[in-house]
Length: 168
Image (cartoon, rainbow, N blue to C red; front, side, top):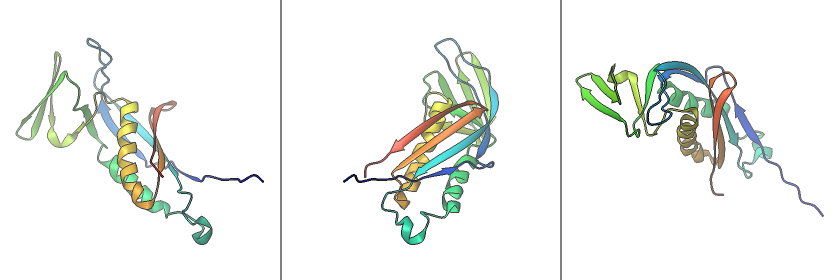
C-alpha cells in the first residue's frame, strides 16, 4: 500500500513588497558599475509545516502576520543607498551626520541615515535575496516554518532567489 504526502506552500507576492534603492555592482579588481537605482520587487514562498493542523483551523497563519514582517524588512532598505560592508576595497568614515565612502578611485559623501551597510561583499540580487531569506526565516521559525524561498527582482525578468531549509 502506497503512502502519500503533500506539501503546502504559501506564495506572497504583493505589489507593495518592494523597495527602491541605489547600488553598484563590483565585477572584478578593476570594473564596477556606476551608482544607479532599481525598483526591486520581492516574492516570498513559505513552506507550511506538515504538522500545521490545517484540517483543524483550515489555514496555517493569517497572511497579515507574514506580510507585516516582510514589509518591515523591505522598508528598512527603501530609498536608501545599499553598500557592501564586507567589500575589501570599500572604506567608510563617519563625519558628523555624513558617511564618507571611498571605493578605489571613487569618493562619495552620503547622509548616514540614507545608507544601509549590508553584511555582504556585493549588493547583487543574489546576496540581497540571501540576506532577506535569512532575516525572514529567523522570524518565520517562530511559527514553525522550516522552508522559505525569497526572490528579489531588480528589473522585470532579472532576479535571484535563495531557499533556506531548516531541520525538522
